[in-house]
Amino acid sequence: MVASVLAARGAPRQKQRLCIVWSSADPDVAKSTCFMYALNAKRFNWFDEVHVIVWGPSARLLVKDESVRAHFNAARKMGVKMEACLLSAKSLGVDQEMKKLGLKVGLMGIPLSARLKSGWKVITF
Image 1 (tube, rainbow, N blue to C red):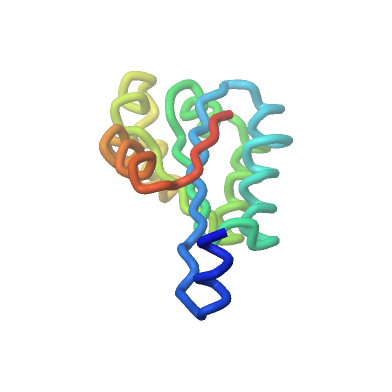
Image 2 (tube, one colour):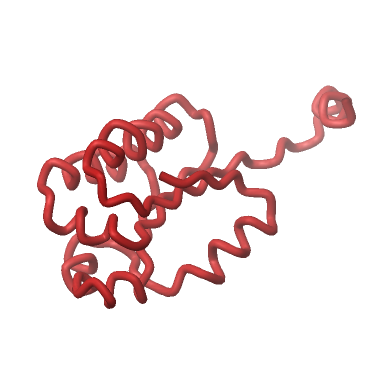
């Protein structure tokens, strides 16, 4: 109720932000769930910002599977921001390949925690 009153008075709308934590090594989950939702959330403006964090086994899948990479690239071209967890990528031996894909690879615990604390919507696949 308060939000609708403030909106009616011209108060600025708070940005709607989504962070998807993608950790599944299943290519079907990647293509038909994670990237499909991320791409459409951006395409249809369901959220102002859409980020995907590649974390865990999904890092190896992204590096090894060309069809998954095609979906990843389509979402990125649509404006979905992509990041990857450095520690999990290193533990799987794919950190250098992830960087070659143009991913921002870094420590993700603090950024994810900050997003959770500041009201981002967070989902996992």
